[in-house]
Image 1 (tube, one colour):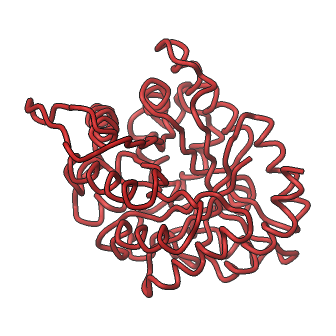
Image 2 (cartoon, one colour):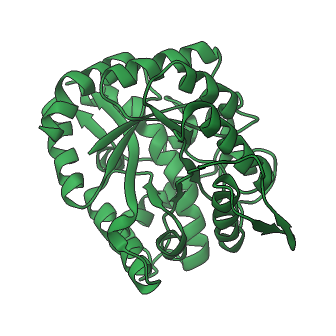
Length: 333
């Protein structure tokens, strides 16, 4: 199993670079950042510094979307980084949550997202694509390579990931839901004539190592609030008790009462006060190192190829070091 580190691009950017270097020294192979231009600093500028100050780390957004940048700009940005540092980027992409909603725009449609996946990949790898009916090719790209991994929760989005994406990003670490969603993605891939096993499965969630479970929950409760934004969209689309979406995913948002993106992705987020301890325990990795190892082995057995650690809490260095010294060796040993 591969491991990644996910950070927000809070200033100073040098701090993000330093933590990514620390992660690489500890055996992490991927470095991810949020992508929301109003809430945090521009990630692709910082990605360039991360790539320059690491040796093998692959970097990308978790996740970008098809609207905050035009598709040819997104493709050219990835291709430029790859040309400079040797095909070490991954395009994580989704409909857009904070990046869109914080400026008053709705998330992208799945149809637009599906089209963007194809166009961005083709352009970044040097092939011709059509944008608004116009054929476009970036002529300076040579030997470009850009895997595109799609974030998804609902049945239609999971099916799109199976049909189009090179990888699937699932932002929660509940084994039951992981099994259901991975199965949905792989079945959609098979129905589309693709090799289901060729799709990389990445689970991303907060990890907090320690014996003080109450403190760990408080540091990671924000994550249930963030996931709740996407779950609320599913409930609005499919209904509260739809057979298409597991109740294990939807039932916990019944007490949700709005969301303030000013606290998005941060420990102590007051908009996550509706999230019960049970959801924090299910969605995140908490407790002593052995508890992390056991859950990661269970996820690996379900077909998960990478676990990406959200490190938005007060123990980032400790978690990175403990994963490097104890958890990654045990999971992969």
